[in-house]
Length: 424
Image (tube, rainbow, N blue to C red; front, side, top):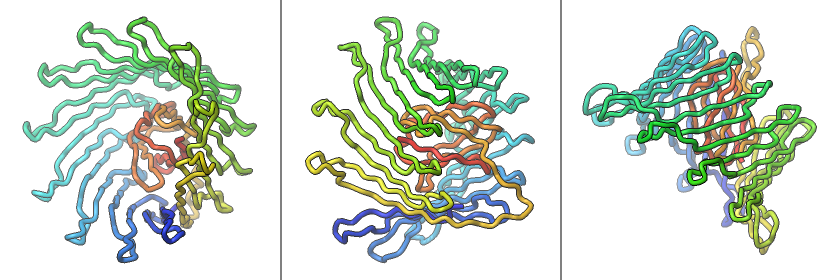
């Protein structure tokens, strides 16, 4: 388990790395679950780490997370201040059936409900839908907000996902969005369509279309995106991404091109290359943008990763701000990580991850496909320990929207399973 991670910034004044941020994680040695995460900032004036925020976690007997409390450090009071609390209930199959988010009211020193989500499942533990309510202080009651329904095929692949929103003036549910998918014989998504509801004509309107092509190893080699052209009343090319892989199925290059309407041809936009070591660890990622003046790709960033003999990530470096005149990057940041192994009880079985994420690396803003062997809650952490996304994964194939994720490394945690994700 990673118990400490540090972020240092390069100082041009002292010509050395200086402390910036630190994350301290506390685990229960008996069952290897996270109990607390503390985030600190370095104070140059006092030369010490100062508290910034922390998360406190509790679990049920099945090690399902039932409580998350978020706090920030109150410097005037020299104590922790409550911010948000999330409680979760689960059924006998460890499916999350109720989630309640509460906000701390500093005026009355009590927790007040903010959002409540209930979920239902089929006999295969696929989530059939969810119902979201928001607390109304004016009504002093819960108010309808979102209603979702999901349809699956015999292989538990999500075929259709429809969302409705509550129309407050008319007190009725109205359609909002719909997403439909098709799959190949290996249960990988081949087509994806997004539609939005037009309340004036009472019809679904096309918005977004994707077509995926795979190689014999089920690696995505091409992703074609098209947008609906209302004037022409048909699909129009928008973007195409082509990926190449080595003989170990590691992605070694991603080429991105956009459709030029005036010339009716694909134009280069960006390229990302990856280098792996003999243990399949990513050790270098180079990002480049197309420069029309040079008629060639030009570097935009370079990421380097270091590992110990156990293949644990111990440091990474990121360089950016390419200076064409000097042929070098102008800024660099290095982060180092401390990994501590906690002994387990001898009767505990070895944990095997039941999560598969693809594509990995993932292009920023694209949808992430997650294949899970079971249904349960998940959290997506960045390297600073911040929870960037959370929710529920169904057994089988899932699609996760990642529009708010920045480039970098992330960790997808689902109970005791995890998977590493690179966003480029």
